[in-house]
Length: 295
Image 1: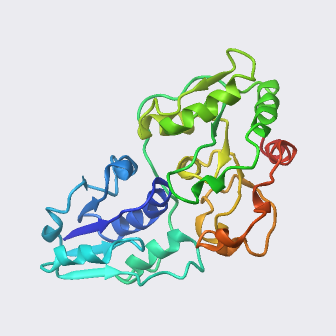
Image 2: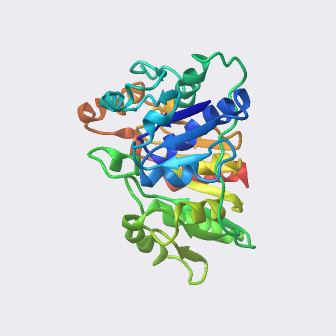
C-alpha cells in the first residue's frame, strides 16, 4: 500500500501534521508513505520513521494508492491525481479546533480511532554543551505576519539581561532577515553572552540546538513548534494569532498574552479593522514573569 500526503504550508504547520503521519504508520506499518511538499518544509519530514520519501515535485503522485490532502492543500492539485484510487481531503476547515486535529481527521476517515500522537522532528548534529536559551523573534513574509512581533522590540533587551543574569547564554535562531532584529538587541547586551545564528543554520541544525536548550523564548513561530517536539520549557509572547488553532503542543508551555475578545478573528482578516492592536503591548515584565515559572 502506498500513501501520499500533499502539504503546502509553513514549518509550524508541518510539525503539527507529524502526529497524523505517526498515526498513519501505526495503522499501516509496512506501507510506503511519501510526503509531497516544498523545500522550506522538507526538512521537517526528512528522517522521520513514519515517512519513507519526501518529494518536492508531484511527478510521482499518481504512483500512490491513497492521497491525503492537508487542510491547506490546493484543490487544483487534484487534477494531477486522477489515477489515484482514493483521495481524502478535509473540507475547508472552520478552525474551531487545533490544526493538528484537522490533520488527524484525514486518517480518521481511513478508520483510525486512537489518540493523537505527539509531534516529532529529528535533529542533525549535536546540541551545545552549556546552559542556554533559544530566542526567536522574527516572522514569515506576509502582509500581516509582522503583527506577531510585540510593539517595542527593545523590551527583549531586558528579557535577555534577566536570562543572562540567571546563567543562560542566548542563541538567536531564525531566517536571514531576522539577523538584523537580533543584532540590534545583541548590541545592547554583554559581550560573549549571545550568539546570532539567524540565517546561518539549516532547519535540522536549528532543531539540534533547540533540542538541547534549557528554554525557548520568542513568538508564535515554526521554531516554537519544533521546541514542542522536545517538550522544551517555552515562553511565547502571543499576539494576534488564534491560539485554538495554532498553540504549540507542548506541556511545558507558558503563553504571555493580553486578552482581547476580538483576537480569535484577527488571524483571518479581522486585524485590518483593529486600530490599536492592544495584543502587541506585551512588556518585558510580563515575559519575565512567564520565564520565572519555567526556570
